[in-house]
Length: 306
Image 1 (tube, rainbow, N blue to C red):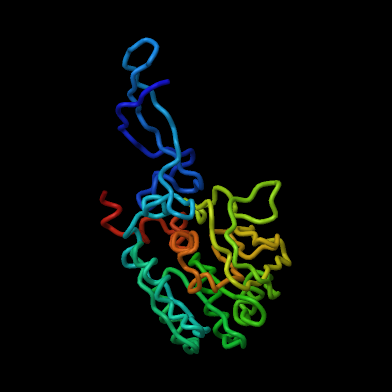
Image 2 (cartoon, rainbow, N blue to C red):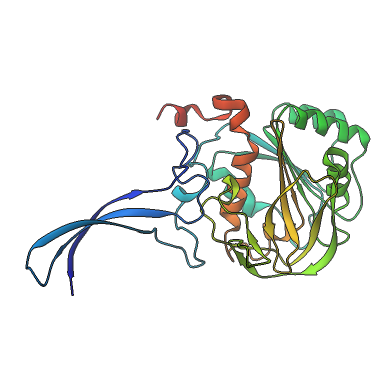
């Protein structure tokens, strides 16, 4: 038996790690490992031996890598970037305080319209100063075609859009906009409330492996009651399969444009600390910034100078 007497020299490992300043080195890795140099005394020979081993980094209580350094983006990476939120459902104490605090860690400010959307003119003026738009639906459609045209113009330029719905009928505007933009929608009333892990060929539920949004995530909470995504034009990539095997979150990433369609907005305020939600929200926003299109124009000068 070998007795370990020293453990030192830890550093992050991961194939496909990003060299971009705004991303952490673990970008697009779910299972994050580190190398460690161990020095021990061989009990047979009595000699001191040094070897290098690889192991998973420390995990939080839910099994995900512990620490902001394992998020997709470094803290403060997007200082000066604004997310416009059309927060149309505000029931059950949903005040957006939890996602707002998480987003601020990466430098994002949040400009939020509650319960009613602004006029199309005011929405355009707000989006002219924003890097992305989030829409959190309620039970009735509140956006009109003029709003949709403003949002499509914003999206066509490469700015990110996140459409949040939930179980029937809490997806009116998410469906209106997703049909308008990409020909997809959601429906259903499914009780979930489970934590899902990484998707494999033998599982019906799980997370898409090795996507930028799922960086540092092996487990994520799926929401309470959720809806499933219908991809009528086969333009979406599944990101989260819920425990019943349906797709609850999908992404669009074509022609330099990015969009997320999600059937579980309850994750934003119910059981926030269950597994992975904070990291997921931060990663999603960092992905929707679309650095791959806009480059250093969307990155904090403090981060670029490092």
